[in-house]
Image 1: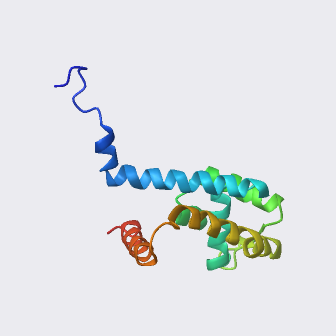
Image 2: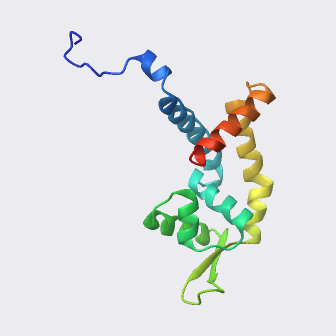
Image 3: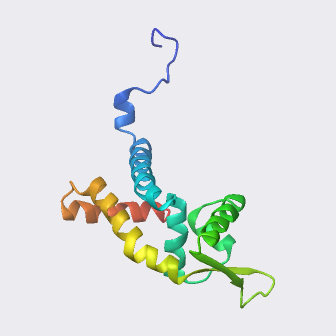
Length: 151
């Protein structure tokens, strides 16, 4: 037992060798940089995530978007409301279930993604991983994809 009475107090070395801590630290850094880059367009990183999901998948329910982004239902409603007010997404009736709504990317949302947001986020990505060799970046992406997929 150490002199301060705390046996399990993590040391800087323990944190520097902790995969979970390092992943969280990098994610926090990316999120902060994305938030900074997106604030000029009055958007948050989750807003960008919603727009990208809709760009790649087409119209989806709020629940499905939330599931794909791991965002709870009440937060998702708030995000969609804000994006709809800005004219970036639109709610329409779901063709499969007329009682439900499908969220769709508008032309303005698509233009903002292509002309502004994708270049901005690519710039942030480059600032974060730009110091890695291309093969290291590719290797890191493969490892992260495996971890994100559950192993």
